[in-house]
Image 1 (tube, helix red, strand yellow):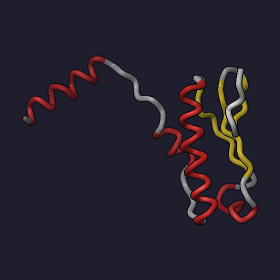
Image 2 (spheres, rainbow, N blue to C red):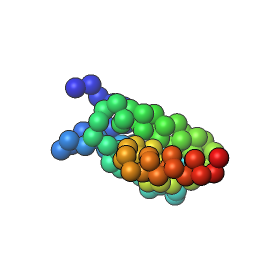
Image 3 (tube, rainbow, N blue to C red):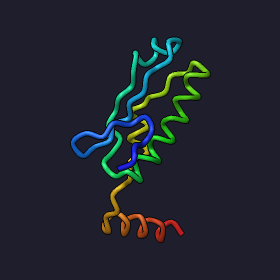
Image 4 (cartoon, rainbow, N blue to C red):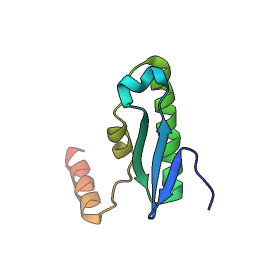
Length: 94
């Protein structure tokens, strides 16, 4: 199994794990650790986006909501009833 940068793999889940630079400790604490998923392909995408966002945050001094960012990147379930309801709504508005 290849190692994904800034992750730890335990009990079937990947955790994003990163130290915080001294100038940003007041925003995040000394380190950030959050569960990001169990499938390596999805985890790679989430970690890449999270790393990019945190690098920007560390440089700019702006704090980001790490939990909300990870949750926003979670795949949405593909349920046929939901897809049908969206399709029906689209037809009514046309």
